[in-house]
Image 1 (cartoon, helix red, strand yellow):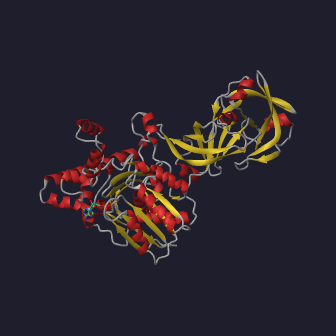
Image 2 (cartoon, helix red, strand yellow; image 1 turned 180 degrees about the vertical axis):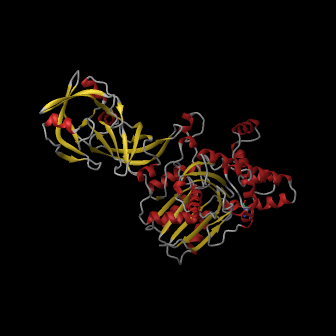
Image 3 (cartoon, helix red, strand yellow; image 1 turned 60 degrees about the vertical axis):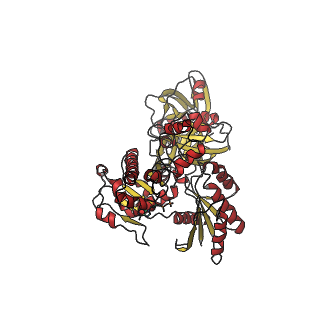
Length: 594
Ligand code: ADP
């Protein structure tokens, strides 16, 4: 199984052919491509396919810079995916069109081979809302899709994975700051395996100082330049994207090697460029450590991150307070051997490990492409079935016998999804001060406390006011009279309106990134009455099966009729109240009781 990876940059095409063991069979790159003069991207593609003529190719992976918020994982390419990539071309005009060119070309040449898109944005697509949101007018932001997307995701994810391997700890137990420092540069807070923050934003212009890009600049400066009349949008773009960063600061080059040389020779602007670069990166490490509430390792990657020991040393200065202890000798002598993926440059007792990782986006793309084209399911967030619970009661043995006769036992009508739970054949009548509701289902098995669960509408009919409660918390709840064929029982308390909740297993909780007793919000989308349910309680137990329970009023409010289906997505409320989209799942209704 040989996988071809094509990585189209704004002026380059890099490609590599991997075998099933991720060994490189062939690779190459074409640079300085241009659409007006000299060699074009299409010429480069033609050359590359000539070169690869004698090799077998079984799958093709394409790096796609911008997938917006539409893609959270590598995706097999079909017409829908192509039009989505096209749609995001406006936001990445220097990259997406070339990726599309390569995709169309390979589809034409190899119509039967699977093509997979691996997105730079996907790793960041589940960033918490607090991190992805810009504090500008919310309507404007929504209308123009102004949010932080983040880039370099393939590299950040790869570097984080290599670091976790070295640390011999699962990625989802680690808080890492990954620094991809190349011509483009970005930092990422990788919190328990997910991107929690990243320095590139809506475009790859924000954040760190880069080869020719400015990174963070006060937006007021840009308005000032426009107002001055000296700049228009085109020249401003040129200034910020092509003539700033290391190049603009130093006035020498965008290549750090040249700048380091000039600085050593005493050039003041070169020294300033280095200082500004290091300071900015250090600032982000500190900020991300704060955002994650701690840090286990710092990971350097990219041309500068891998090769410039003095830049790494500068960036790490003053980070001792975080527990970072750089081993100066190891840092200076660190060379990642050809067949190695990383080198460690911190002191053995450093609380925070510092690791240099050789970036390998192509390898990561090959890995994902192989995984997807081999039919492995993308690590999807679990699907969440919804069960609509109609009014029902859980009874004690004592109450059950009082209603159905001494020695009576519940008889199973049908099993429920949760283990050992079942709907009984037995029914009771609820007698309230205002009205009665007959034929209310009893659920088994018998419990140690009586609990009657009704919807708000039922309460109005009965003429009672029941509190919204978690199951089992009936102390101080509303009274109700139960009537059975053999007698009736007046409960002093036990009537509740059940709080909506999701049952899940620890593994589901891990995938959703939630814990037992968390409150999340769940949105039911796509139907006639899309709705977000807030305050949904998460209940985690080994024996649970994944299922959300809502009552009939809640189901009606979202127009979830019997057998209806729609999209369901779970949002987890951040600790500061932001809502984080975790994923999507199909909705299918399951009758819990009649
Ligand atoms: P790109 O983002 O274009 O892939 P790279 O990751 O190759 O870029 O990084 C390019 C940067 O790495 C350049 O600024 C280059 O100066 C720097 N770099 C490469 N090798 C060294 C080195 N030995 N010392 C200092 N900087 C280096």
